[in-house]
Image (tube, rainbow, N blue to C red; front, side, top):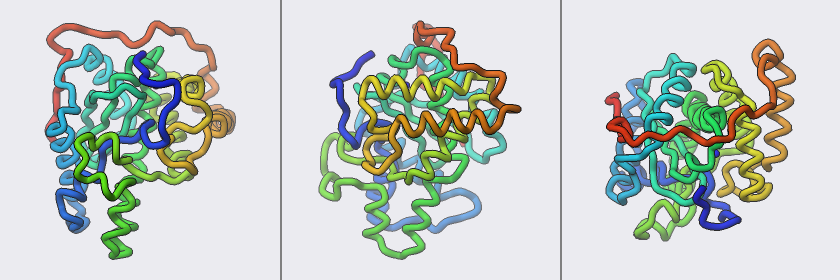
Length: 277
């Protein structure tokens, strides 16, 4: 982003998540009207959290919470102004996975945290997921489907398996969102901008992509969608992006100074703390 269940990963599981299918299922296909007060995003975010909680996927205690919050708060500050309060939540999972949800929650699983070799890698993962929020990718996809006024199409945006609604392990049967290649490139670029603004090395994105390539092959950062850009392609585009903006990126270099992994804590702060909206 070292507990990996398999040397390969299915196309639906890397950086996918439970996501908006929860909100849509709870609404029986009915979506709340879009509103300037962001009530739609908050409703979806709350329903995703409640579903993950009901499925016992959320970890209330993790030795990674202190470092996750510290890095996340710096990324959130770099992304200001934004209307939502960002929360960083650890969830279960044996394969590297993270996803963001409307309303500001970002979910990161244990395997990703265990595989991150340094703070720069995690900062760029969080920057990428924050980028999806900042750029409005989740809600743009939902509103496109909403505008079409076809409930089946709306459901298909978020649910890969229409017969999986009754499955016990919802995380294993649903993809969070079918982002386009263009959206993934945009989130990559926004991620390195945010990480560099937060004083982390944006090459952490490159390092993490390289790690994923070793673990999972050249299938891409979010492998659950077959037409996503390959890992190699994204690394090349990020490096080109660095070269095109020397004023922002020239002070950073592609030298990893730490491979010790993320700092952990067993203290009283190693627990989930949710900030209210």
